[in-house]
Image (cartoon, rainbow, N blue to C red):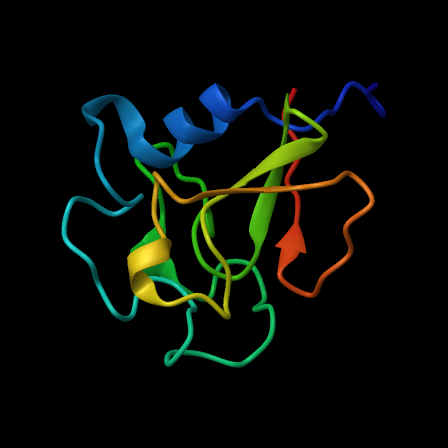
Length: 118
């Protein structure tokens, strides 16, 4: 379903926006940077305003693809939908372009969020 021609991205779309065309591990490159996104031990223990981590911008200019909140995708596996990227309460090893988790569609947590695609 869509709202004003907007929808959740597929996992493939989300991952390309995060990795770019050079298959990087993080939106900013292949090496972990402590200050490029919010995570456990860096930043507030809550979601962050969009754009306050300019070092974490993807090659396509997309902000906040990792850290802050796990981001819903439209891809279902079993009874769950995939979320990507990692959140403010995750340790660095679980944050990045490969970060993936699954939740039932009615899950509601302070570390879950979304972005729209079209």
